[in-house]
Image 1 (cartoon, helix red, strand yellow):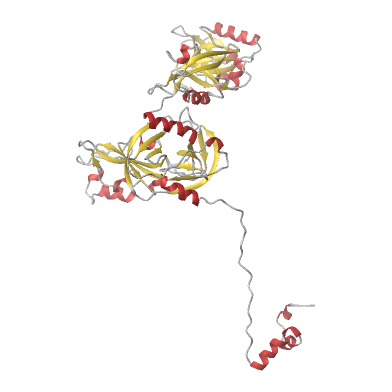
Image 2: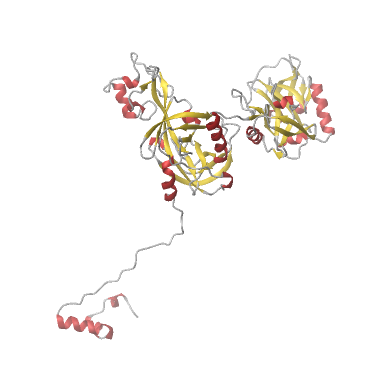
Length: 519
């Protein structure tokens, strides 16, 4: 049986083996050992699955992506530090001597806003001696034509008076603002130069799928051209920035300064424009939002053509249709947009749309929710005639109307009244025990005022508050508790378990569905 001691055999043992006899003979006759070559195993090598490289995409698109530096007019005694104002004997912070203690402090710690603005020196005065031009923001952008049109975010340029575009080779060129649109956060700049610019095209983002690779290129933190990669995490995100929210969500690292920069597919086409991030800390956490190419393409075309965007306008205040509201109205599904109030003189009012109507379709195209209605109406040209399908009094009706033009100073056409007002004191009480509240007639004779709300009731759970006014139930005007009970009893006879209450408060009107099958 072998043991470890046999791992080092004696020379005598080796000579007994024919395999090493020749080697031993050489050693004995020459007096020198023969050279023995050791054989090592190869280094570890793994055949990894094929992974796409982004290098070709980056090489192709980088010349089209730029940094956008924005300057604005500022009072010479006011620093551009997001609300901080400095006045040192009529001088701003950047006009103090270099050895001044405060200037040294801000230089060391990055300026009042934590950036490098304290080191940028004094700005330029305007051509007519007006306030100095001070750096106010820096973002990203990209060329969409060889003659110098480029796209960025509205929030990058909104307060600017002068704009500088920095190409990927470091060249700085002046740009002028062609147009901007706050509702979609898009803006167009133009660089006038004899050269032909490298530019990129729009992708068909309808073909973009969740899980597709994307590449974000931009200017985070003013570092210059930076590339990050990721995937499409979600589509159709609503982040509460406006009625036209329809963002792509990506997990590529996007930070401050990436605003206005493009997100590319692997063909080098722009699928979205980076505009916002979700971040508790202010830095990247892998949740970024990009304006889809399909939205940006049309808005940018309007900005280049007219300098502004003309949107369709229906002129009705709307809110979502919840399951409770759908049940109270006899709708089979919680779809559509519930009309809270048509605006005076609007196309909707002129066509006969009333509060309590539910818009269920436009030209036969189903409306999913208020956001869907707002986007579809906004995308229609003013003057277009459309068929609006309504759910009214338990049945479907169609009205024809001409789409108007959204006023520039008008509040968004689609508005979800979800906030609650402050409580006020009641003047007297009358019980509606089954609904968990008491009401009194309103002083103006319109509706009834809620005097109190039981904290353990459905009315309280659905946000009704003391001092709010009930003006209608199931689209029937009410002026007393008896009126309310009559409408409720009629709804019960129709087999409904909920009734639709229209509530008016200081901040607007809304609908609430309350259970009516208790007691």
